[in-house]
Image (cartoon, rainbow, N blue to C red; front, side, top):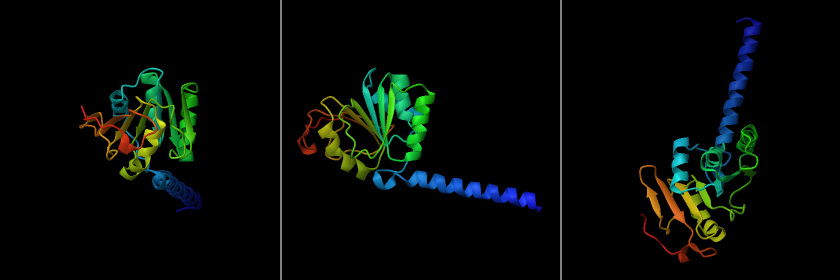
Length: 194
C-alpha cells in the first residue's frame, strides 16, 4: 500500500469509527431518561393518529419525538398543531432543521428537554412509544395535566390500572381518554375497551 492509499484508508477508518460512536451515543442518549430511540414506522404513526381521531387545529404532543415524524404527519396530513419533546440534542436539531425546510414553523415546534418536566396541559392528543417503566412514571403526570377529553395513544405499552377506551390489537396500540383532570390514576373512572 502506498502512502496516499494508507492515509486515505486511515481517514476512512476514523470516519467510520466516529460515525459508529456517534450513532451509538445518539441511540442510547435517551435510554436512561425514558426509552432508547426506536423510530416508529410512518404507517404506524398514521394509525396512531387515526386511532386518536386527530382533528384539524388540535394540538398533538409527541413525547420523545425523535426525528419528528409524528409531528410532521400530524401537521401535514391531519391539520394538527404539533409539539415534540426530545431530550437528544442531535435529534432535536434534526427536527428543527426539517421544520424549517418543510415550512412548518407556525404549525410544528420541538422542545429540547425532558418530558417529565415539561407541561403538556395544552395537548388534545399525546402520542408515545416508550417503555413500560416510563409509562408507569408518566401516568399520574398525564392524568393531572391533561384536560378532560384529551386522548393518549401508547404504542405497545399500557398504563397499568387504566382501561383503554380502544385497542388496536394488530398494531399493539392503546387509546386512553382523560375523563377528569387533577385526579390520581386510581380515581379515574374505568371504561371497558371498545
